[in-house]
Length: 71
Image (cartoon, rainbow, N blue to C red; front, side, top):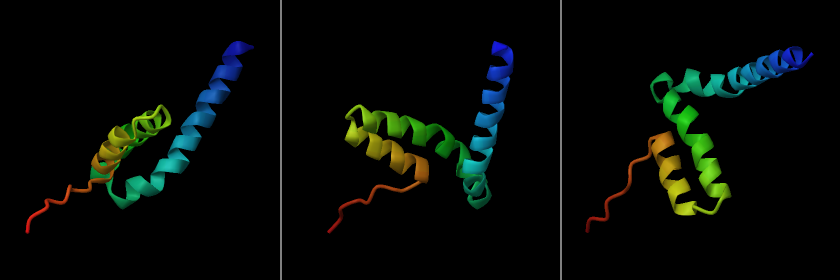
């Protein structure tokens, strides 16, 4: 009985991940793995209070470059 529940949960998780990340993959396949890895880690760090680290990981995941302050 437990095996059936685990299989159903894995199928639901796989379907959710496919549905949630498919538009991002279509938009930019090269940066897809950054999103898969970076966003959950950033959310975790943001949730436990590391806002600065969350911001750096978010910028890395979406591919933003840091602006240099030249005058």
